[in-house]
Amino acid sequence: MKDKIVEKLIKAEEVRQKKVINLIASENYVSDDVLTALGSSLTNKYSEGYPGRRYYGGNVVIDQVESLARERALSLFKLDPKKWHVNVQPLSGSPANFAVYAALVPLGGKIMGLKLSSGGHLTHGQSVSMTGKIWKQVPYEVDPKTEMLNYKEIEKIAITEKPDIIVAGFTAYPRVVDFKKFAAIAKKVGALLMVDMSHFAGLVAGEEYPTPFKYADIVTTTVHKTLRGPRSAMIFVKKDKREMDKKIDKTIIPGLQGGPHNNQIAAVAIALKEASTPAFKKYAKQVIKNAQAFGLALEKKGWRVITGGTDSHLLLVDTWAGGKGLSGKEASDKLEKAGIIVNMNTIPQDPRGVMDPSGIRVGTAAETTRGAKEKDFVEIANKMDAILRK
Ligand code: DSN
Image 1: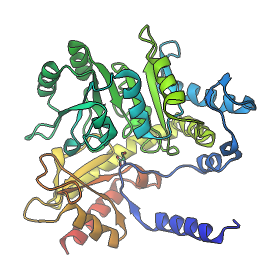
Image 2: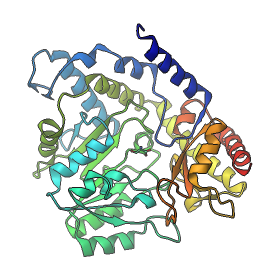
Image 3: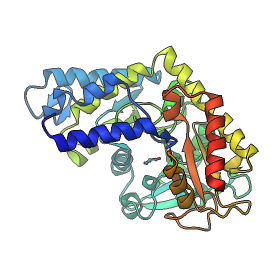
Image 4: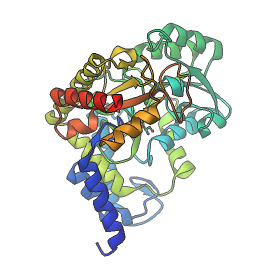
């Protein structure tokens, strides 16, 4: 690389990534092929529009790349192209979710989403997100006792509030979501059901987490978490007389975005193929086994694990409880100094603020890619315990 300053920074980040134990639940390590596609000449091309209908000439190859990514996306999740459409152009998860609301929810309409402190995402209608400014969030929370979703309560809220869209999905909820129950509630109140599977898409692909596709009208996902692809997102949408597929496509371009990032879309296509292999299925299984072993080991050391465990790749740990009195920020800082990377996170009913919450979120997707097994996570739990008690 001619730019020695940037080259040095890239090398330094590579070294950092290799040195640490990475427990960020939303991160992963992509294959060399994905990296190659990201750094390819596809980045040079403008291709506003969709395959076969572009505003610029010279897209004969790019059309094939995007069509391939679409075919692989539908095939990975076993979707019939006559019944489902996928848009692979969203630049990342937040713009993908925004695009769904912009296409399908009237301005000022209601988005019913999981509260941030219960594990929801900013773009599920939180007031600080544009999704909560343009639309109104109707929040639902996890049950204060079980810390799990309470479908009876969710139904009550939906009946009272009559949201336009119900969002199921999370960034910090460790359990499986009952999409069938969500679909029944959405049907009862005449709302659309959107599932944001960003966190667990790889587990769905590996058939280790329930599929939302039987029940949802729209499914959004990032590609870079458990799915182990490049930073990118996709919107899956049912094809029927509501023409939601056409509305979503028009909202992405010309509504919100310009030229798609073609290098990224090629990398998505590669990741989708990788995720369809038996090796990936094994990976998804191991991710969950590791998270469960990790949770048990933390509990054995006296740490309170939210909901008492996990069905997925992530765990929420209460660092304040049991007289430990460590805020999530303090815990995260202490761990980082010792080479373990986590993020501070609110826990259900958190009395402390978002910037200094009572817990941390940890995940197993990244270290499982690097070959970690259950015994490694028991070791990591013991190491974390020793660091946090100092
Ligand atoms: N930042 C992602 C996460 O960590 O869950 C969501 O946007």
